[in-house]
Amino acid sequence: MRLQSRGIEVLPLSSREIDLAKPEATEKLKNLVRDRDSLVIVSALTPDKGKDVATLVRNLSMVQNVAAFLEETQCAHVVYISSDAVYADDANPVRETSCCDPSSFHGLMHLVRERVLAAAVQKQGTPLMILRPTAIYGAADTHNSYGPNRFLRTALKNREIKLFGMGEEKRDHLCIKDLSEITLLSLERRSQGVLNVATGESVSFFDLAEMIKALCGNETRIEGSPRANPVTHRHFEISALYKGFPEFRFTMLADGLTESFAIMKRSLVG
Image: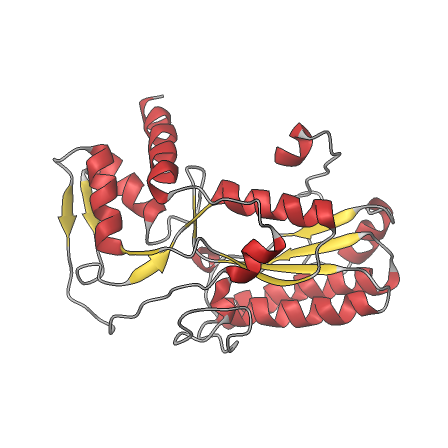
């Protein structure tokens, strides 16, 4: 929608149009993508769809077929939406130069995809931008992952928010419209390289729950649970992002939560 609002032609493709896991996807892409087009790759089976080896292999088959297309066909620019899951769990603060040592198949999948795409675009000299966003929140999220998305839904539906431990961990939370804007800026400028997309401000899950409780009403309960894993924190050093896009400003967490809350509440009432 952001691209269209600026008069930029967009062709969104779902798995119904092209199943990237199937070999014929390569030829379909050749017939659709023109040499002046930019290609944004966001397709993946996310952890809620599976965390096993079979899911990993299917995700890698997608990038194998896209890479075959990129090796043989010229296009103007490629942007790949990766994840901060590629970094080692103890990377803190996280920088673009931090050690990539993923602890999950999801993180491993993104790291392998990055390497495969980087090798593929070299043959045609196509510029490649890799964006590594932290955890994303927004009203239309379908993953219901631990954090703002889940907290808002359970607070609105059940008047409760359940924490791991007492929510001591600190994390960065990224509003989906901010990732969209950084992607748009990357496309407009034909940016290349690797860039983390995070606000640089980490808050505890307990403080996050308190913010959501204030939005949903004091009758919302915040409940802790026995801790199964040690407390870990993740912070980001984002000077590279502001060097590349000095005019960009992130959505404040309170503002993003308020916007998501209003949309979710309307959908429940409707």
